[in-house]
View 1 (cartoon, rainbow, N blue to C red):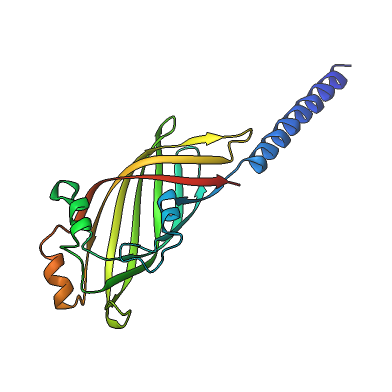
View 2: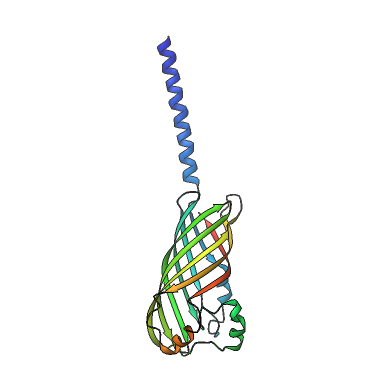
Length: 214
């Protein structure tokens, strides 16, 4: 009789464990581990592609959640610069755009594929580091190629993740970031003279990312 009771208890224990494991596996399979996002600023570039100040910015992030705190990703970005990126807000950035006093004698097209690491700090607060090797193409105002070069572009972000909907699939991430660049090679003299007047970093850029989890 004791053996029968022991066998029944053992079978019940295995059954409960199996049910718990099944629920755990189902929860893991239902969890949204991947996300795709882009900066909302790129929407302002739609149309007027030939405008002098249109950066023709395209940027896409694909990320995977390793756990609740750690997220890794791949970043693709391309943009067209009409003046040095290192002009700070307090240097009169907007005024220089209006006056066109620091415009390049053409354009700089930068394109790259890089990686990112995002760390959730507290609730929705997060910090991100992105590293983006870039291939540079210098163009004159008629889009004729002048030279090619290389740049290593890095950015550092502090933001907040806000999710919407029943499964929190849709999200926005308001954030502020700083960026710097090194190994800036093979810059034509006319472009380099302008770049050398300013910093090799830019501080306090506000941004808003929009994305979906799946």
